[in-house]
Length: 117
Image (tube, rainbow, N blue to C red; front, side, top):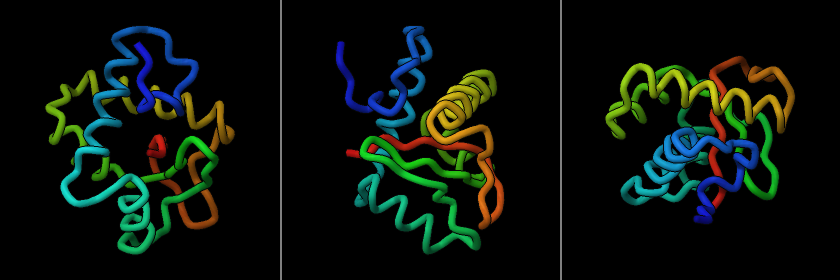
């Protein structure tokens, strides 16, 4: 089953991992009144440090503060284990796409990859 929410995660093969990543990406897309582009814009203008590290035609690569992950974990009812695995998957994809560091000249944070709509 093709899922465009997984476009930024081409190396995720495990079905449970794919569902976990898709669940997070759908939660981003389902936010009321905001698109993925709009959410990234909000993050860039509302946070003390701009979390956007880079982007390509498929995704935004962000370094976010831990509270962002906590909010999505609560919104999607993730267990601690699921959240840890999801963060690991994002970190792996971030490293594969951008390089090993999630930090940038604007500060560091936890890797988050958001598939563009």
